[in-house]
Structure formats: structure tokens, C-alpha cells
Amino acid sequence: FNAIQHSFRGLQLLLNASKTKCMLFNRSLPVPARPTSITTLDGSDLEYVDIYKYLGVWLDCKLSFQTHIKHLQSKIKSRVGFLFRNEASFTYVAKLTLVKLTILPILDFGDVIYKSMLGKAPPYLSSLVTMATPTRSTRSSRCISLIIPKAKTSFGRLSFQFSAANDWNDLQKSLKLETFISLTNFKHLLSEQLPNHCSCT
Image 1 (cartoon, rainbow, N blue to C red):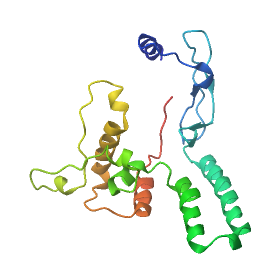
Image 2 (spheres, rainbow, N blue to C red; image 1 turned 135 degrees about the horizontal axis):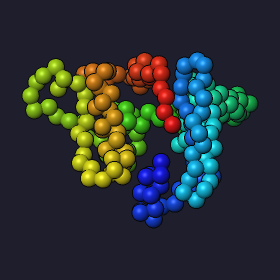
Image 3 (cartoon, rainbow, N blue to C red; image 1 turned 30 degrees about the vertical axis):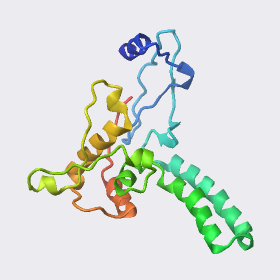
């Protein structure tokens, strides 16, 4: 952790201790004891948390996503309630538009890679993924894959353009999709790939 902080300082980046949290992911019982506290270079102790909102997704230490689901339910409930209370005020087309704009994005959040490949994501994301064309016919070459762009730095490998293609090709080692399926079926397949146990800090 100190090495990461020193790397940040070398890039003129400052770690904001008040916005940095520690979480221990573990589905096993009993819950493992937390490690000793992590201290930043300026002497601040990082807080351990059991739930945390990161990039719009609520993570919990059990990876059950129950907290995230409850927040989604609360968001969607208020929007559905608004539609029912004002049902007579909108035409069918208007209601359909409101559902697409206010409810479906909440449910579909996080599926940007697959949606980009289907051409259903915004152009600024879809333009960053390129389908790979196999040079010879093999069983693995028939699977849908993406071209992984070159990334010379660790920060380059964090970009959507690199990580999306790299993560998708890794996922295809187990999914082995040869044709596109619906987003609903893809979500179901993806849920089956979640590990039963994960422990990291």
C-alpha cells in the first residue's frame, strides 16, 4: 500500500484518506478477523467498512449485492409510483419513453461492455471496442472476441478501451459464446460466473 502511495506522489497525485475505505470480501463463515489498520503516509488510518458505494454500485463484504438491490428497489419504486399517480396525464408513447429513460437505465447499469458489443451503448463507448476477425478457423476462433489495444502503461490498462476487451476475452474462456444472445440471458450467464469465495483487501 505504501508503494502505491509513493507512486501516486511521483505522479503528483494525493490520496484522499477521507474518501478511501477498506473492505474485506469473504463469503465464508465465520467472518474472518479484520487485519490491522492501514495507515497512510500522512498518518491517517483508513476506515474499514462493510458496505460502500463505488461508481454507482453498492458493494457489500459478502458480495450478496442485497444492499445494491434494495437501493435499486427504492429508486425504481419512486419512479413507478410517479407513473401510476400520473397515468392519465401521459400517452402510451410518453409512458414508454419515461420507462426507457428513468427505469431501465437503473436496471441495466454495469452491462456496458456487452451493450457496447451489441451496439446498444452510446457511440462514445461502442466506438472503443473492435470485434476481432479470426485468421483461421478453430473452435476458439469461432467465439466472439475483441481486439485488445496496446497499452504501454498501467494507467493505459485501466482505460475502458483496454480493460473492456481484455475482460471480455477472459470471460469468453468460460462462456464460449459464438453468437450474440439477449442482454437478459447474458446477465444470467454472468451471474453463474461469480466465485463462491473471494477474499481480498
